[in-house]
Length: 226
Image (cartoon, rainbow, N blue to C red):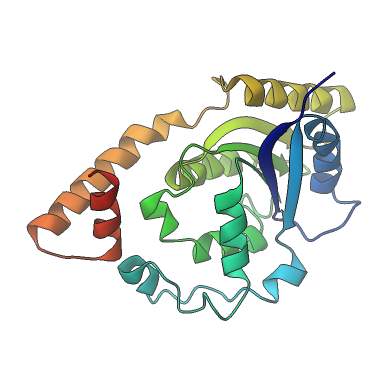
């Protein structure tokens, strides 16, 4: 008998919601196993959500104040709260022209300042990537980097292309869940980015202190290291 953990798992679906889509088929298989171990909370970034999420306009207000000018005008606050409240996050996306879906990119753009504050640090992440033929390496590397900047630790990578068999897919799901349980992942780790990110921030905020450039980000990191 498996005793369910009280940790929350959140699914960010970068695909247009459709039960027949490959990413959804993979997630449904993953979900069956995850629900045996965790209480599951799902969120989908699809057409219905994008109707409530404005595109980033690059005004840089979030970097200076910690708030987006659209925070109270669309559904991003709800998404942020769900992300902050989750222990484990599943991010799934189909591949379009060797990149993530536009839906998912819209979300990342709106979370831009989080890439400088890493509020999701310590949370585990499983990636689901589907394509017919190409782009898996490019997209997985990109998402590893994105997750690193957010503070997420990638503990699983599930991929699918035209050659992927059901047995291979089931094996990748099992491996991801095993690593999720143990927290030990070497094949899919994104730890290699950690030193780079730390050194980048270290230089950035030392320069800001030197030049007396007081911003939300500097105050955040100073408070974090008190």
